[in-house]
Length: 209
Image 1 (cartoon, one colour):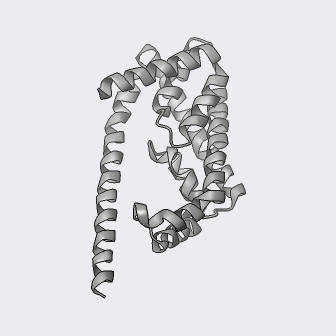
Image 2: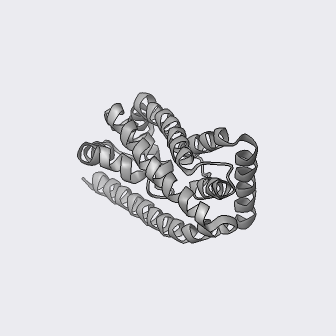
């Protein structure tokens, strides 16, 4: 099942990039930044492979990939900035998000704001979800977008260069990154379990209190 889904997603990416060229890179990178699971570890290495055939330039791949990320990141940030906090404050308890959790998010971005935006773009999976909470935390937009762009540029340049060097074997890169994806997913699952346990525990304390 999962293999079939991954094959379908990979086929879609190849189709879009092959037919739309640089515009396809911008579109896919924009979409995958808005919490939609289209792996950049397929988009950019495939574009890098096409660079090895002379169709693309890796510097343009990195530049336009970062532009797509910045566009998608801006949309996710805006949603978080305008509607995220009121929604979380109103319905947060339903999904086990308290005002204390919002305060933690605020403090995290207050301390690591620009660095978090930059490093978040260098981590598979995380890069698709970091922009929304940055908007909720009201990270200064100018710094957010600059560091998001820079982080994505580094990520895209690295992947496109590797894809170009791998040539026809570019797909091997995604299988290698999948191992890291599994680690990130495992950590996220552990974090969710801890999150639920903490909130259930706190509710029990509140009732007895």
